Amino acid sequence: MARRTLFLCLVSSALLVDSFSPGLRLWNFENNVRLGTESSRKFPAWESRPAVMSATRLAMASTGPTIPSPRKKKLKTFQRYLEIECWKRADLRGLEPVLQAVAESCKQINRIVQRAQTDDLYGAAVGKDGEQLDANVQGEVQQQLDVLCNTIMLRAFCGSSRAIHSVASEEEDEPRTCADVMADSAFAVGDYIAVFDPIDGSKNIDASLPVGSIFGIYKKQPGTQVDTATFLQDGSSLVAAGYCLFSATTVLVLTMGSGVDGFTLDPDSSRFLHTLKDIRIPRKGNIYSFNEANYREYPEPVQRYLTAVKSGASSTGTKTTAPTMMMVNLSS
Image 1 (tube, rainbow, N blue to C red):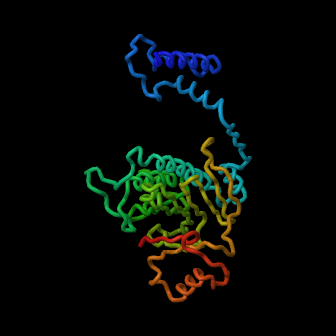
Image 2: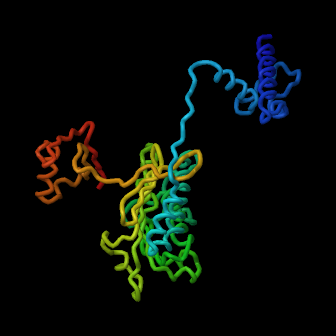
Image 3: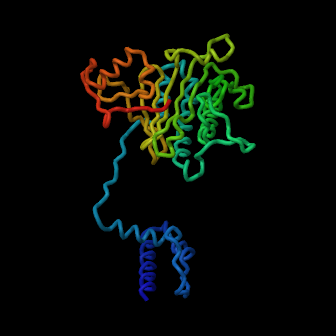
């Protein structure tokens, strides 16, 4: 009797909700909760009763503290930022579609990272023969995510325009021309080359730790063949560089030689918004980061400096403390 009374109450609530919201129709309720006479029939799972769920949520929303609605900031989009910056510098206009494609690839990778565990995308990558793929150039076992994100980044750099001539990925042994990537000789005319790591730290996903994508773009030397030496230019020769960080928020950081700016992915609009302007490293601070595992291999001056930083005897006069301030990387 109690169950039938509860059931009728829920039906009444669903009818009330439907009368106020045209989007909630009674037929949806009837299709998922059969209004038959089978009193012994078990109720379906909550997710199969959208009208009942809506009625329950309405009741919950009518009691307790009011949740304030967030107010959106008026921020420039990444697309608009690129339009302005590339308009200022005519030599970079050919990279506008490339950088826009990189931003889109970061959105795709962000979704993949979030679904890695639930969609069975985590674990070592295997080839068509079922055998585990070889390690990458860093000697790391390639993960499924590495291979998938590498394909996304290759298409972003090579398929967005004809500005990029060749690419080099950490997941591949040798650089490749975009003509090879796209299987079309029309993509072998670009004036730039790109280097990238499609997803750095993919094993961190298993522990819900941050991961990221890193990229850089160089100018191809005119009149020369693209070979390994072309990709070994100094960092000062970079035309553009940046990274995407996938963590509590997804952030795209970019420099095109005149400052560093950051863009946060808005989950509502799925657009990168200009939230960090003119990023600079503080002149002094209380955080330092280095590979503690290789400390004994560092030159003596570097060891002395790191010791001074930890003791507060450096030029900054600021002492760092390991439990709260020190960031240590124990990887080899």
